[in-house]
Structure formats: C-alpha cells, structure tokens
Length: 223
Ligand SMILES: Nc1ncnc2c1ncn2[C@@H]1O[C@H](COP(=O)(O)OP(=O)(O)OP(=O)(O)O)[C@@H](O)[C@H]1O
Ligand SMILES: [Mg+2]
Image (tube, rainbow, N blue to C red):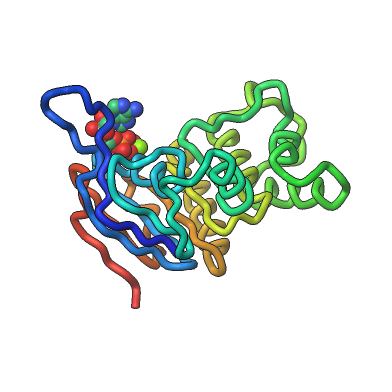
C-alpha cells in the first residue's frame, strides 16, 4: 500500500550543517496489519509519519500510496485523501474545547443522526469511557480520557490507514493495553501505524520498524 523510496527530510535547509530528520531510506508497508514504529526521541518517527500522511512534504524521495505518487499532489487532492482515507491520533489530542466528548467525535463523522451517535457512543464505551463522561468537555476530562476520545474520533470514518503517534502516552498500563487491543482488531482489515518509544505496548505487532538517527535500523515482520 505504501512504497517509500529514498526518502529524506531536512527541516532547515539554510544552515551550513544539514540535519537529516530522515536520512534517505526505502520502506514498503502492507495493506493491512499493525505496524509499530519505535526509536529514541528525535530519531524521526513523527517525521516519517507526517511524510507518509502528506502532512509534511519530504525534501527528497517518493511516497506511493496504492501506486500513486502523493508527495506532489495538489492541496485539494491532499485534503480529499486525508479526509477519505486517513485517520490521525496525535500525541496532543486537539479536541475542540467547547464541545463535549461525544460531539468531538460526531463533528469528525458523517453527521449526528441516531446511527452515528450510537456508533460514537459504542466507540467511547469500547475505549472504557463511562456514560457520564460523554457529555463533558475536554477540560473536565483527564488527559488519558481525552486521548481515548481522540482515538474514537480517529476511527469514526473507518479510515483505511490509521496514523497514531504515541496513542498510549498518557494512559495507565491497563488502558494502554486496551487501546492496543482495539487498534489490533482494527488492523485486521486496515493499516494501523503506531509510533511509540514504549516497547511494552508493541507485543502484538505484525511488523516492527526500528528507527535510529533518521534511518531505519531494523525491520522485522511476523511471518
Ligand atoms: N518542525 C521542525 N523544525 C526543525 N527540526 C525539526 C522539526 N521537527 C522535528 N525536527 C527535528 O527532526 C528530528 C526528528 O524529529 P521527530 O519529531 O521526527 O522525532 P521523533 O522520533 O518523533 O521524536 P519523539 O519521540 O521525541 O517524538 C529531530 O532532530 C528534531 O529536532
Ligand atoms: Mg515524535
């Protein structure tokens, strides 16, 4: 599904000593499955995910998604691709502050009819939020609850690819495990990319990409 060739990323081109956030590597990702991206802080994990999802344009190299080059598509095409095919969970949750947990999910979906509302509620329940939290605004929820609302929101449109940057960072062990279980289930027929520095949440991945200093230092796939 994703075919990356010779991808490199330099954030500040104007300095004398060029710092490669991505150092020019190839990577092929499958149509479905749970892919873990692991590596120390600053190794380029988020940058790689931004380049794959068209949130950032790599300095050089090619990213093909289902055979189509997506590094130089128009803003309008990029917007459509993101809305129709990609879902995002960022480390910071980016929930709308004046909307309830439930409305934050519905606003990303296809309406607020009965069916959509039930779907959103089911997602929240599955993620361990209680009924009394559905109507609360982000400021009245804990960090981990907000993060789980953001995860529910990212899945409401059934994206073909789910990009999750540290989705379990503010969760306790039990909730982190539950989130990974949900992502694993979702990845049975979709592609889910999980960036983390916490190896313990990646026990059930189908593919593990290890990053080091802007490059891939190891790839392992479950046969
Ligand atoms: N907007 C930016 N401008 C300049 N340099 C940046 C920018 N974003 C990231 N970098 C640099 O690029 C490198 C890779 O950063 P990136 O955010 O991809 O790392 P990461 O692996 O996601 O780290 P972390 O685990 O801390 O989130 C780092 O050296 C970082 O300083
Ligand atoms: Mg990061």
